[in-house]
Length: 135
Image 1 (tube, helix red, strand yellow):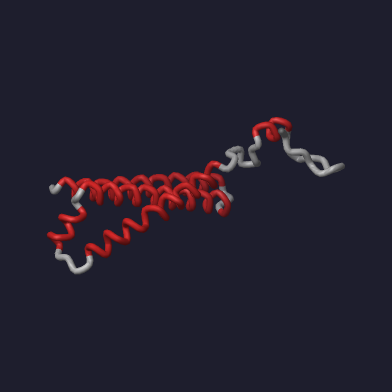
Image 2 (cartoon, rainbow, N blue to C red):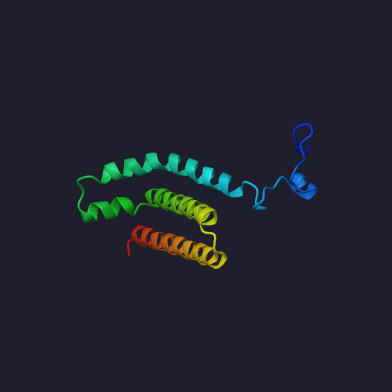
């Protein structure tokens, strides 16, 4: 089923664009749904994260390291960090695509955003793995 314009109006979309249901960006709503998915993941993971933070209150460094080093806590933290960074990356990319109009600057900004996001995720994952392995 294709989208048809109101009676008498001419559509500005090409026939192929109507069939594929993509907008002018040619990517559909992929970023929109990925950002919603990461939002739901963060909402579900925020409750365990708050519980972990409340457990850590009043503990010294050794006690905190012992709690944060347990595998279930490490998995929850890793999932939360990955979802948060992915959400941030998508949001910043959408902002860059919408508000940076110079092609070269847009490309450089998107590359910097990707590099920063990957670096942040790898750093956080390394810290969590190091803490959970007891090294």
